[in-house]
Amino acid sequence: MKVSVIGASGRVGRAAAFSMAEEDLVNNLVLISRERSLSQIEGEALDMSDALAAKDIRVSIISSCNWEETKDSDIVVISAGIPRKADMDRVDLAIPNARIIANYSKMIAKSAPESIILVITNPVDIMTYVAYKASGFPRNRVVGLGNHLDSLRLKNFVAEHFDVHVREVHTRIIGEHGNHMVPLLSSSSIGGILMKYYDEYETFDLERATGKVKGAGTYVIGKKGATEYGPAFAISNIIKTILRDEKKIPTLTTYLDGEIGGIEDVCLGVPVKLGRNGVEQIISLKMSNEETRGFLEAAKIVKKATDEVMASLKEFE
Ligand code: NAP
Image (cartoon, rainbow, N blue to C red):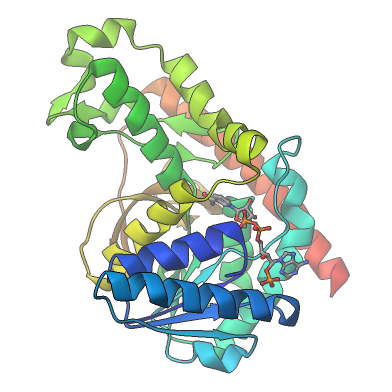
């Protein structure tokens, strides 16, 4: 099992690499950076190896600026990009990051043509579309992480309100990893029972919880400069599901071709069956009227922004 991380000198990249190594998910880990960060990722690799020895885990870790090292990767994670500051919206990063993602996706298509690309860079829904188009990969092999992390955040708030173990909560957020995210409360359950059947449901303030999920990234960035552990563990969840062919149903950004609400030619967060082939099925949804409205709105907003970014990439070429 081989995973390469592009942007491994960054806070999300290095934390994700360490998390997947520490969970013993991979045999070969490749940390890729630009030349200016090579020394740093060499240090990261040795530091990680020392930690792994303490846990009796053996992983080969290579640090390099040479893309040839990504050859035969099962998964390539891209977290390279200009980071978001607390006063920036994720969409502010779209055009500069799209150039980076388009360039890197083309390089992955050459060096690791059979891999699955997992996009982390924000705004992730647009960047997933850019990676899909630039790599030329089939759509099942290009996914983005965004709503999976949002869903984990919502799960925490639900567990707290209903005073239950977080493992009992099945809830999700779909749509945009951003202001137009849509919590799917109508199909959320606790202990296998729909949430609406619980007495505590009456006092669950969905608007407040969604507001907190929307603001979670900005809050953490404002306090400590970046989000690390949340995205890192969410990434290793996804890596594990793919490499172990678990066929779990996380919410990932994927290219839609009319499967949900007739939405097409845009990448959005939806429930997917995930396994060794990447996205093996897009799960169709029964939503409330309000959820459907929110999802269609998210699709409209993300599609418009994606079209603008793709037009700017053409001008740049
Ligand atoms: P970071 O610490 O600044 O690291 C980003 C890395 O990107 C840098 O170490 C650098 O790597 C590379 N980079 C920076 N500018 C570049 C450029 N102009 N060209 C090529 N590479 C460049 O940022 P981070 O906190 O790890 O966040 C990385 C990305 O993930 C951001 O876009 C962030 O918004 C996103 N994010 C997404 C989620 C999600 O759920 N989808 C969650 C958290 C963060 P090298 O020097 O090694 O090349």
